[in-house]
Length: 247
Ligand code: PGA
Image 1 (cartoon, rainbow, N blue to C red):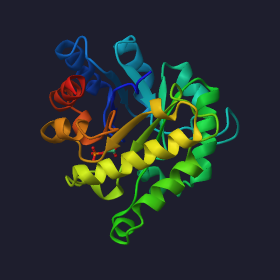
Image 2 (image 1 turned 135 degrees about the vertical axis):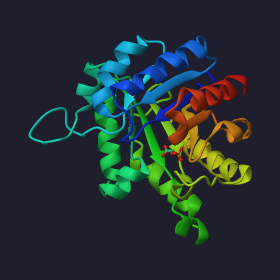
Image 3 (image 1 turned 60 degrees about the vertical axis):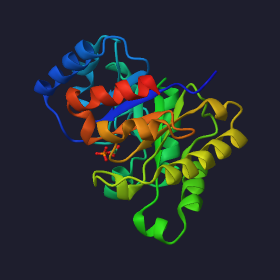
Image 4 (image 1 turned 180 degrees about the vertical axis):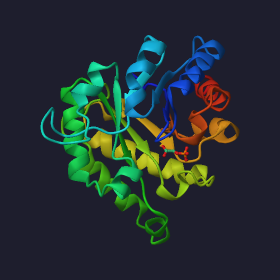
């Protein structure tokens, strides 16, 4: 099995019920995309979006708790996301790692919870600009992969997203050689550790937009994208889906 192609949208803390019309537009413009399509809206919209999409695109959460239930005010369990129609959950996004001081161990525990709930974990890794400037990128990515991806990960239940922190929401992107270097390392590390690591989908994320998508998707071991700002509007996300379908 080859890695599945996945165009994943991360709406972050953006969108209301009215934004769901973007799903109608996306489905109208791309009724049969040549790749998997996932949107992760704010948790309060997961149920309504899943109903609206009725299986034509996948819907996911942006975080989950490591426990299945309990006294954790404000948190959301993986089983709760699954219950309202989510099939995926983003874990370890750099904004969670920064805003909520999430550690690799917590991301690993959340990933286990996601797997137990039957969700596909989209586990994010990425270096800061200071780490890149210090020549530490490959070490940082290796350590995050080792610490965040649980032993039970398979190509069916896990997707890895490489998102350089300095490229998120900045309009700046690494060169294709820089993306290729990290993706080759990830493929090598995952293949060494997991029986089907060669088949895991590896996404690039950070300022992906219609104008740079095709070039990024031509990079070896890039099987799709995790898209923030450009996933909010069907007019932007649609061409990215088309570029991945054609890649
Ligand atoms: P961006 O965000 O596409 O807006 O840079 C990507 C992400 O954080 O997943």
